[in-house]
Image (tube, rainbow, N blue to C red; front, side):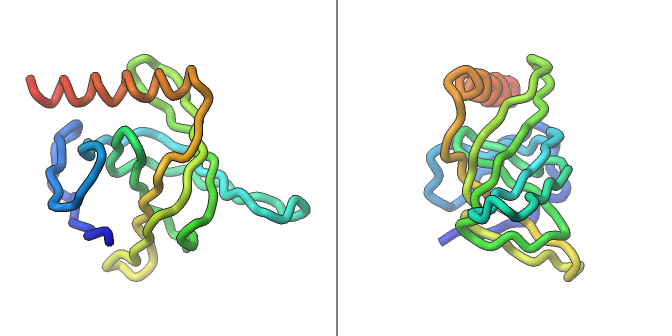
Length: 136
């Protein structure tokens, strides 16, 4: 079970300590993302959502949207990272969704499920660099 906590008031790059059993710490980071909702029905047009991440980790990320995206929905996520200035692509699965207090938007947590080898190396190095920066 996931426990959600309010992230407001956090400094960029700050590591967020959770009581959950996570494989990797969360980093408060706002990177531009394009989220494409993948449909099992090839005839349906896919929806793309443009947002900023709220936090990131080695194995997942969190973002907010006005769209309800059911748990287990598969996504293709393009993350615009800043250093190096590059876009990495991940396939991911929605693992939790929570309606925000404004009752209009949702906080969505996703777990990365697949990426090509080069994108995975770039993402891992990006996360490592962010963790190192936060320790300085």
